[in-house]
Amino acid sequence: MTPTFFVSLVLNSLVILIANALFPAQVVLGNANSNLWWAVFHSMVMLTLIGTLAVPLFEWKQKMLGRALTTKEWMIGYLAINFVGVWVITRFSEQFGLGISGWWVGLLLAVAFGFVQSKGMMKVFKKEK
Image 1 (cartoon, rainbow, N blue to C red):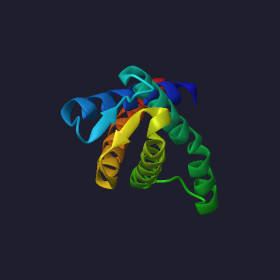
Image 2 (cartoon, rainbow, N blue to C red):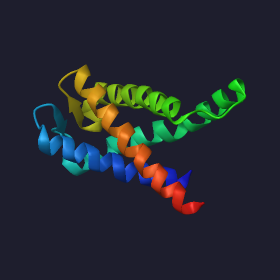
Image 3 (cartoon, rainbow, N blue to C red):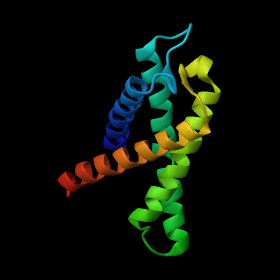
Image 4 (cartoon, helix red, strand yellow):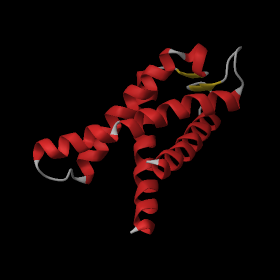
């Protein structure tokens, strides 16, 4: 779980920083209580924790089905988890320092997080085998 957590944390942080740089009106980092870097760290640690702690749910689902989940099923699952995670984090923007302009921004961020996370995990675990 540790490599998964740190790879996801770095990738999530890069995605949110790039999104903020390209679309500062839609993805807002920082507020009166926290600066940009604290907002990135705090919100992405929370999103990474949500994603990492969801892995046992996927393993439970695999046991229930009696087969391994396909890549498509993992991607759809993480799209939902990332969307809910971003949505919850942005509902507490005063504490986390991350705000979005609408639900559609959260959905686009969830797609970006899912894509980058899947590519990163494939590279990390391909090297381990």
